[in-house]
Length: 104
Image (tube, rainbow, N blue to C red):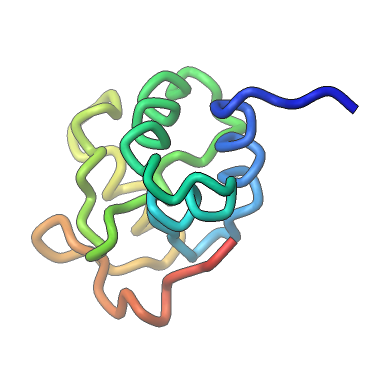
């Protein structure tokens, strides 16, 4: 079995986040086995926005803030995508974060 690169592992995990839930960069890094690589998870997601099969909008920072929102095309697209899934956002933060958080 060949090893997959880090970005591919990130994408596999992100594809499993259920609609209506969010996870964090750090939780994805921890699942991959390199807990200190949350920023690298962000870099992976920043480079995949042309792939609609990867729901990168479901990944937020450890406090529920939409820190990656400026990487989405369109005005407030990340917020809009999350709200379309029933997630309430106020001031670029996921409301009821504990209940919306999904752990991979």
